[in-house]
Length: 190
Image (cartoon, rainbow, N blue to C red; front, side, top):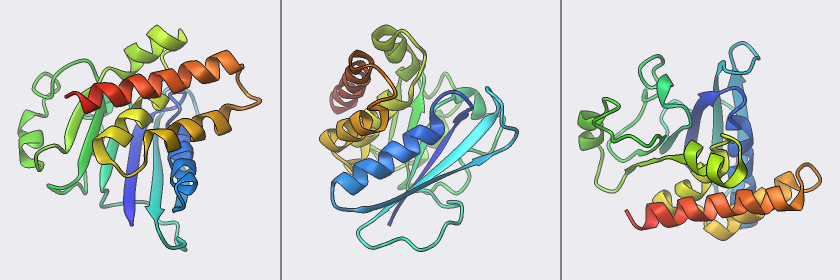
């Protein structure tokens, strides 16, 4: 089983990201499960969302305490909450920032991780450029696919299209696909 924990703030699409990752796994013939936890339910409040991926049905719904991957949608949470808790040297770490790990105070932590397990991505800036809104979730899903190989970019883009069909205009849906694709390419070239 592959366990992913997303950390962000309300309004950043943290819950939607976990749901789309679960759908991407399903598209690949896997079983996926996604569920959030909330503090106060307001925009800007810390949100944690979980996603499990397995080749067998998943029959439990406990929070993920030992993640195989951490996706940090809001780097301001890194030094406020214990978002890195439960990580091991083989945990993947993906942080939404244009700054280096040294600049955000994680250089020693990243050195502890196995090589190739950590990446930063300016997902908010990418989304702002392509979507006109600071919604980092689809960029981070594309980057997640590149970093971990757990899901494919095709599965991610299919999940994006399915999730937003009838909710967003076709042009905005395709802009989200473009954001995910660009993020995938950025991480593949790191």
